[in-house]
Image (cartoon, rainbow over all chains, first blue to last red; front, top):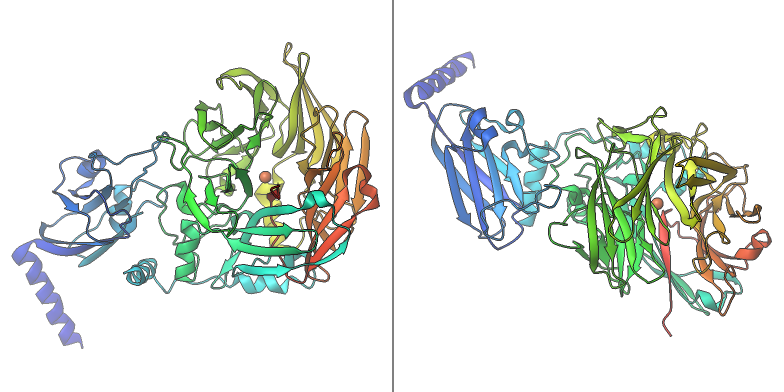
Length: 138
Length: 490
Ligand SMILES: [Fe+2]
């Protein structure tokens, strides 16, 4: 038993030093409207996430069904967070009502943000530590 | 796909999360406090059945009484602690000369549908803290549509003060869409107390305390439910607001001294601040501009009993609480223990503001009266105000009487059903070809000793004689908040 875990620990250490990158499978679920586009942005580090700028990856997908699978590969080590929105009317932005509340679907990594926008602290993840991420649009 | 997403949700929440067993605790309290069965709630829609009728049902009552209230109080052993939290169910009483039927249907809100499929509660609610709730997109994600049902054009609106109105189809009680009154108005709070004006148009407000600064949305709709105008008004502070009043010229709102701040739940975020004057804000019906704003005695109010102008004076009738215990603690205490002994009933009060000097005087009748109703054909100064009250012989917060008060004559009326009964909001229904003031009071009631639900009709001018007609069913219909009577056509 002890022997096995030593080997496992060694192989993990080797993997990390050899590649320095990780992969993660992201699934976006609960897509309601069939129109528009899903806009996906992956940010590395708090500053980029907070400023909603310089995403490590920004992708746009047509809507095809109520879920979407996005495999992310070769991510350099670091802390990341994801913002997703469903631009249902193709106007390039997340529409809001007069109080500034979103009227189109959105989501964050870790399904963070109980009552709206998620802080980086709640949405952050380290791709070296997990292989899958489910984001349920709300 | 739908099924898989629920499995994903459960995985996300951690299926091992401990489920509170408080539903069992609630049932064990019932032998000592049998009235708690009225708050038990139901787990399924209630199919149509006939009531057993007694006495002679007046022909003016041919039509339908719709009511709304919290009814899904527990799922998978988890029970809500605050009565305000339960998912709304519409109760429909169809009244004909030869038969009275009852049917109950849950409003299929987004929250209800999602939780029904999952077999458990998933979302946060206003008064009960839940760990590991699903994230909320906007206020309508947790809209329980449980407070009132209001007729407009040929539709009904199920109302909840935190979010949009939900369309209900009268014949089937099917749930339609969420109503957005105009561009950018999706999900804006639309209070549970719209007021129909003499010209058929409809006024309403919506309280938004959780933004800074706090705001109130003001609405004026045409008789057919089209938006005439709206305004977002900034407030000095976020006092709890549930209802409002209109006069010939004004819309009158009360920013109460129960103020929003920090807390784990919506209701826990409010605190009673007796050092802070409440604000009476008077707005022009013409353009919602602020005509005047008055500091008044710290007050907590759910329901107004109308307002009118008398020369330079503005007269506002209210069911006024001296503090906010009812919402902040007593409702939870009642559900937890069966008793809320420290809570004071709302008393019918009249606030008179001299609009020239700004001086206000509060006249408290001392009479417990909630869920006010009156004959809207009559000038309010002359009308009697009716509502639920108490015989003084039941536990606190248990309304066991129908009461009336006339400010002009300073006269009280009452009919005490007494301990054993819980009396709900009366509707004033005019008698055929009658003078203003002549009408019937129609209300629901629950007989917790025999565990049966009923309807009663009283002559508004002769309350003390008690019901002229009743109807009963052994079905325990969940207690509710508010409703409306829609007369049969033709
Ligand atoms: Fe109310």
